[in-house]
Amino acid sequence: MSSESDTTGDPAVASAPAGATKPEKKPRSFLRELPILILVALVLSFLLQTFIARVYLIPSESMEPTLHGCAGCTGDRIVVEKVGYHFGEPQPGDVIVFRGPDSWSQDFVSIRSSNVVVRGAQELGSLVGLVPPDENDLVKRVIATGGQTVECCDEHGRILVDGKPLDEPYVVTDFPFVPGSQACDTALKSARCFGPVTVPEGHVWVMGDNRSNSADSRYHVGDDMQGTIPLDNVIGKAVVIALPPSRMGTISSPDIQGK
Image (cartoon, rainbow, N blue to C red; front, side, top):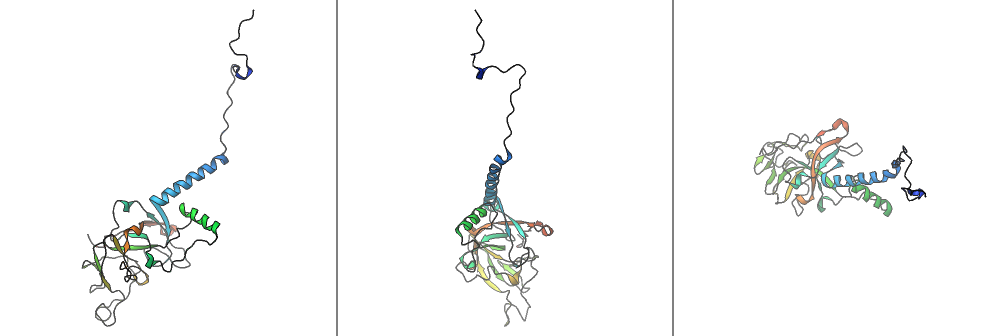
């Protein structure tokens, strides 16, 4: 009588011959992994742009020479961080990006296509930072905060906050101010002059560094918020010029009120 075998006799489950190696797993095709990698990258980009930081293009001359921008030229691209103002409020001297209130956005024209498909693609692109947001985003410098009174000018043509002159080394271009002939108390009044305006709590007063070419809080002083910007409209603080390479560097926030 033959002895029983140690196996079931089923060839499908028979032991492999001694010394045989198991077949290696085929590496997953890169083309099969590519969609997953793209999806992960888009999700990370969305989270980064929404909660951490975003790049914005400077489209105008209102912040010259700090930030470069003009019609028909290559404007600066700045990195705006969004985290800091969750733990504190904008301070005088900060350069901020904000959504323009209604009175600031009357001339704003949507950059979205009238084609439904293209517009949808633009909206998706905006979520991950490939397309600019369809809103009137502006960049200016904080001059005064809630509860402070701002006006211009003292006898030297400087802006006053709570009666004290500001130190503004970044201002290169401004309206003429000539004591005795073109000031705030002369027949020919200087275009620098405004106020006094008391900034409501939860708002900031902002101005462009290019004082003679900036439609800032002074320009909108007749609106229902006296030209001030609600903190809810503030997107973040401009911290770095990322492009072009020749202008790369940090954006300073000097202590303009000498606190």
